Image (cartoon, rainbow, N blue to C red; front, side):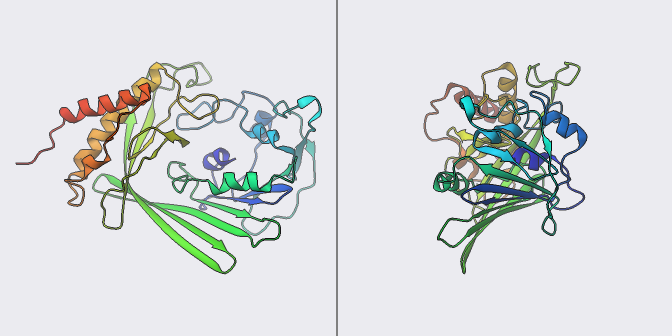
Length: 339
């Protein structure tokens, strides 16, 4: 759902996505333009995503939309809907035929609504925990989505509303991304902010990979690497292990800065695959880090502090340990000391 929210354009407005969790349903509202004919054809098939043939998109498996049927029995009401039951352990991924439903009246500013009628209304707490675990940096690398809100309507309790938003500025070759989280429960409200210096680097001539090709079978041989360095209110490093991303978070691997790149991922999106393309992307990440350090050194607050972002502990994963080796090699070749 968030994948779709990050890709579809909204008519000159700030794109937002809102989740409302009830015991028996999840409502997903957005100000995006909704489904085109080609989108509907795509979700009525498997492996036919309308987004997979361009660089910088998440979709490559072609089943993302239909994965909601693993926990919902009906998606509606749009002006069309899907429905299935759990007979014979059917997980709903094969649903391809929608049926017509009258469109419901939407709230002001909402142009698309998805309603998922849940299979089991007794699992509210289990589902709510997934929403509560959303990372504060979740929006960081979604290119278009600027605002995400989550409302939890727990039985016999005051509703909880959490909103995530971001904005970005650029100065002296570095972007600064501001992430704001606001939580409300009853009359209580709290707000927190995280700031990150980010560095972007474009990669070209990447090796061919089956997961990265256009409709003609040609390689999509380009990608963008983004590194984000968290800082506090005094522009000093915030030092804790950060997630790596392939647009959406994968896992922590031992680095104190955030890494975003168009890695080819495993089917469950929990880690990357070992491939020539991913190895080439790793080299691009190492170059981007060295380039970022040169710019960070121009900031007094980080001139003698940037090295604190480097790992202190041994990185156990072989793939990510290779990145640490590549970064060291690049830093050895980069003039950083001033006379």
